[in-house]
Image (cartoon, rainbow, N blue to C red; front, side, top):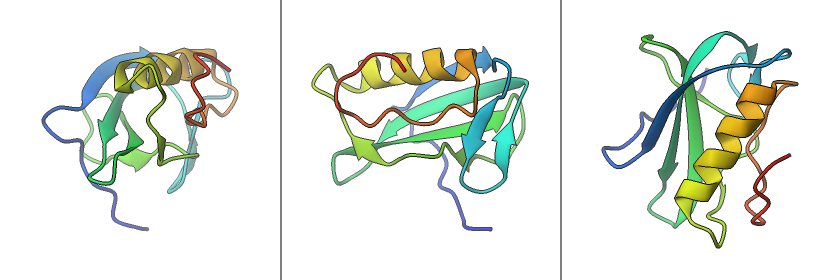
Length: 102
């Protein structure tokens, strides 16, 4: 398993319940249930989305990232990720093109 970083102090964090089909991670495939989602900016200006089972220690990279931060900012990306995870279906990171939802 690849080492996944932990969210930084300025990451956007929210707890969310996955929809049917869960969220797709790079490390362990689909995870379901109550998750914490963290959207964080990398040093190169792109964004990464990390997920973990609520109150767990391990973080996993949500498949599809890192992505460019959309024109609406990291807050818009985080909101789009939360919408996708709530919808389920193997949710992935939006491509950063500025689309607010899947």
